[in-house]
Amino acid sequence: ASSLQVQPLSSQNIGALFNSVEAFLFDCDGVIWKGDKLIEGVTETLEMLRSKGKKLVFVTNNSSKSRKQYAKKFRSLGVPVDEEEIFSSSFAAAMYLKVNKFPQDKKIYVIGQEGILEELELAGFKSLGGPEDGKKSVEPKSNCHFEHDKNVGAVVVGIDHYINYYKLQYATLCIRENPGCLFIATNRDATGPMSDSQEWPGAGCMVGAVCGSTQIEPIVVGKPSTFMMDFLLQKFQINTSKMCMVGDRLDTDILFGQNAGCKTLLVLSGITSLSALQDPSNNIKPDYYASKVADILKFLEE
Ligand code: PLP
Ligand code: CA
Image 1 (cartoon, rainbow, N blue to C red):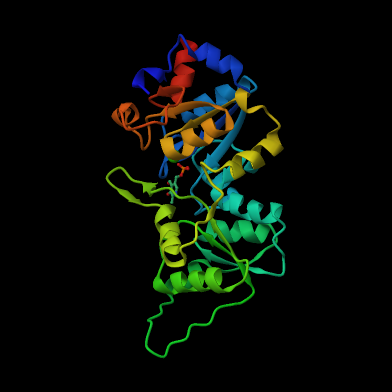
Image 2 (image 1 turned 30 degrees about the horizontal axis):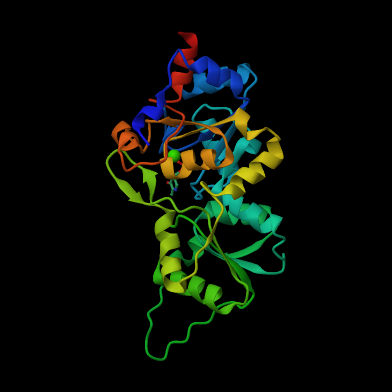
């Protein structure tokens, strides 16, 4: 496949895209914000899209926050967003368990942060682990026998800045020894937090550790898996051919959109550079690319 297939968004082709799309799905980090900073022109662009009757959905793989916490973040950045428009991988993990009728009397062990715990609780599930186990430690001494809760029926793994050997042992024992125990990954992003100077390990690192010890592959609920999309489609009832996924990452966002038959727009305001997009080794090609979300507004006005 050649790089020529990817069109830069322009004042010539924006009309066709705009008129054929009823809902815009936005990835968050690298598209709406970069860490804690709003990306230039986002507020005005989203406002315009709403005023033209477009539905907006926000899909983030970052499981550290719950939907409620994300709604608060949006508001603090001056972007009005309804909690119902947000689909985080933390929420997806809770919904996966709910949709699959995970028994309410069983427990869920969490390698992850507040967002997962909050979503599990809101969905009526009992969890353990999370930040609470961040300060625990364990050393495998010769006569050490580690006990774990036999009533844990699922392990959920997401980004965890306080992952340790205790948590790894706990999750491993649950998955290996509790019959039928599910292994759910919020996402497998190789890198996580965006900072201007450096990339840091993402949830793919924590998930990889548990894959390594259990030799079991997880059920992934975040992008690019179809679970989040199917769930979201049920709620919004829009044909995917009338959706456009806007993201900064090829192997999560663009693939997520393409797998479902959405139009896709890659923005270069995040993790992917133009040269990475055009690299011959890249075989994930979005329909369009633009420098940032605000280009949608700019080109429509031209
Ligand atoms: N995972 C972690 C831990 C992150 O910090 C981020 C971005 O900040 C992501 C995933 C990617 O999030 P998004 O899907 O909004 O780009
Ligand atoms: Ca992103």
